Image (cartoon, rainbow, N blue to C red; front, side, top):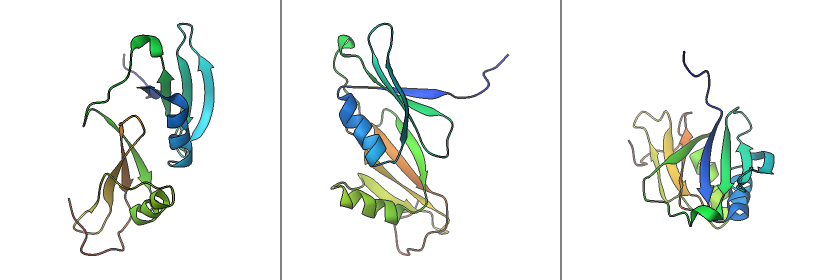
Length: 137
């Protein structure tokens, strides 16, 4: 017997509403449901428009404050253009924390931003890159 599919990933947070706003306004995720668990956790489930899996954001103050370590974990999302997403970030007063870095053959690239709690978000462009002379991986 084996599992059949990934359903969701949970990230525990200190400030639920600040993070929900980031995931919705900056990443464009849709909120699919919100409820309180039997033990009192506040839960918000979000998903990317073209994905089935959800992200569960959890606020559970009884377990103490969340302290995210560097390079602990990250979520990865596909974007059509890292350059255009970078412009979107700038309009919101944000910037990439790392990158963008492009493949030498021009077939795509990646960059990172930090979510409000310190979790890393990777953005991956799989289509050809129009820029030249960019850093490569």
